[in-house]
Length: 342
Image 1 (cartoon, helix red, strand yellow):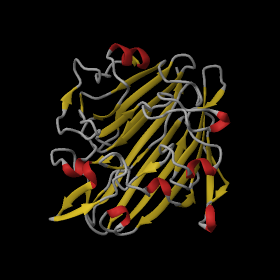
Image 2 (cartoon, one colour):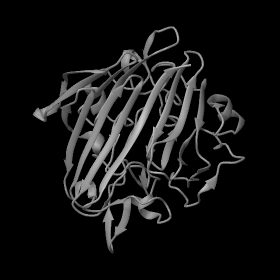
Image 3 (cartoon, one colour):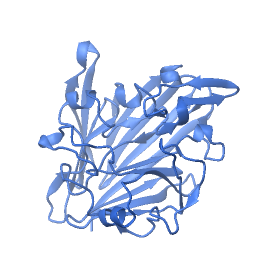
């Protein structure tokens, strides 16, 4: 069984509202989630000695989340990941989005779903957040009603995303938590062993937009179907890190996505999802400038993200899985983060 408690996390400037924190606790996990951006601010997992550590990067105070920071723990949308040149055409009409990542639009724009206050509702084993994204918000068409539900069951945190649109719009929602299974504040993730269940990945151009090719992982640095130790793997292939979409099974059912093991602590994270892709990101742009929880600094490669989602720029690439949500249809995806000790 899980218990849920709520508390005030902080007040937004100039009376813009109060941010609440919800703590979900089971015998195996303790997860803190705030109503600003549906953000996971802490996630405590025991190691094989029974000692609990917080394994997500983030901040102890609300101010940390209000500064410029790389989406720590947040839900991103209306469209996660990059849209080439911040533009797409729908039913003959061209839509222009904010350009906020090189020449492209990233994670919903300047004020995406990560930078708004959501309305919480406590559940017996979790919390549900909802909001209405108005027509034209960040350049996107139509009103979008969104529900994000976090529930805890033993060692498994489940995140369900649902949405309904008043007119056709692209929708792609994910959680942008950065994990370090050695404990947040540990200097890097090189001793993490990673497996991703994907036979193909999406090569990208210099602005990190997929080229359109769906490339087999076989014989490349992207073949993570068998476990690899991250630091050694990056060295062996002379790569700076990962920031790529891995193509998962096309099924809408729950399927295995990834496994990350930290041998030192025994902590194991397994990810399952209904989504067709996962963006594996190794914190390449972290630079140690931000002060995190407990005085931690977060240098390059000090956390990893497994952002389960549709493929990047799918709205401009017709052979990618469909990303458009039409009125009368429902968007409904779930991702499971299962923690254990091995």
